[in-house]
Amino acid sequence: MSSPTLDRVLDAVFRVDGQFRIKFISDQGQRWLGQAGPAVLGANFFDLLHPTDAERLTHACAEKPDDFSCDLRMFRGDADCWVNLRAYRLAAVDQYVLCVIDISPWRTDDSAYRHAAEHDELTGLANRTYFKNAVEARLRSGGEVFSVALLDLDGFKKVNDTFGHSMGDAVLVETSRRLSRIVGGDDLLARLGGDEFVLLMVGKDAAMANAMVKSVLMAIARPYDTAPHNAYLGVSIGIAQFPIHGTDYSTLLKNADTAMYHSKNAGKNRVSIFAADDISVDFSIRAAIHNGIHEGEFYLEYQPQYDVQRRLVGVEALMRWTSRDFGRVAPDKFIPVVEDAGLMPFLGKWALRYACHQLKVFHQRMPDFVMSVNVSPVQFDADGFDRHVLDAIVETGVDPAKVVLEITESTLMRSQDRTERALATLRESGIRFSIDDFGTGFSSLAYLTRLPVSSIKIDKAFVRAIEEQRLTSATDKRLVTAMINLAHSIDLKVVAEGVETEAQFDFLRQSGCNLIQGYLLGKPMSAAAIGQLLDRHLEAAL
Image (cartoon, rainbow, N blue to C red):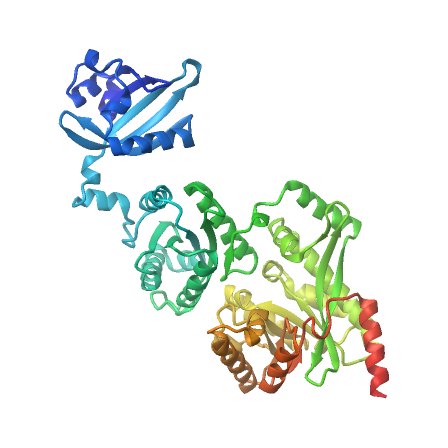
């Protein structure tokens, strides 16, 4: 235990029993303490600690009893010094080996060493160690609510790979500046490493944190002139709240990370709050998805779309799954798993073909009927996406002008050159495109005018706010009106989804919205039910 190698690396090595009574101290440790071995043996290790730091050791041992680490103060003669203590349990004899390194130079308040140890060299932000200590101090201080938000840049790898690491570093520095301008005085911003940043938001629950970090989306979406050609990035954010999403640092960070990946899987450039259902799904559910594909458990429902005169003009095809083992599973639960398992290109291709076959049937009643089909970001990124779409059109013989593919804003921004080529190829065949969830992502006029888009779909969050009694409700109404006017100024149609009340319908109609979709006019239903709706509309028109 008192080998020359250990004595060169460590300032002191102790062996203590289960009550922390000292059984052994290394020769170097005796010299460091300034006490001979016999004077220390038998004493309690806690007697060597600063009284206010004893709780640190107790807490660290209780949290990870087999091996733990903490920083605390030990007495050396009449003075105390900061040390890093690492403990390893000897289970067979119910003892601990305590390895001690003097870190006083790094813990001195005016020391450049401490600043270097606790801050990121590139951006100057707090680093992982500083952030962890700040969160743990907050946990020890009491029960005040706080939230942790994990931020991961979307598209940074491409900038790094294309323009080099020096340009990537410039983007990270600019990102830190943008984020620093948003962070409140009581909050803490840190860089964990790579393109990951993290926020500690004191006194904010998850809902308040969510409202705050929405401004981060817009800040990151602005062009980066630090990179050639004004690189565009996004950011996926996950939020976890103390204490409902975790009562220790590791759990909070892990759950914020889980929520962040939920944002990634949902299309990127968005904010997600942790929910227990977001935790990595059990392998049995993955197996059920594979079985469901094999057994034909996946199917489509169709939500009707009406014009403002309440005439039925089309539907949106929606994927559904009723599992033999789990019953009906909500799309927001199974689609991320399907994407993560690499099955979305297959299921997406099936859904498009099935929807086109059904559209052919609808056209027997109404030749101008339109079918909208969602395209997952994973599906869009798959090789040969445009070819698969054209194959479905040819196979079914449906009129391509009556097919609308709904694509999210973040999908359009992921690979602009490739996106433009794929969309142009499909547009030449007559297929139309709509931007889904408009207003929740980049909302850039540049891509609206450059890409072959025929319509935008206003996200239901804006529709829901139309008649809510909130301070921001008037602003939301102006935003909806502005979106509609913007779309019409460049010859785009506007679809509003999530319309549930007559007040929402009247406001949208008066604002010039073209198509309405929502529970007010019709829930998702079977193809047979849509056929009956068509029959009734045709009879009423006679």
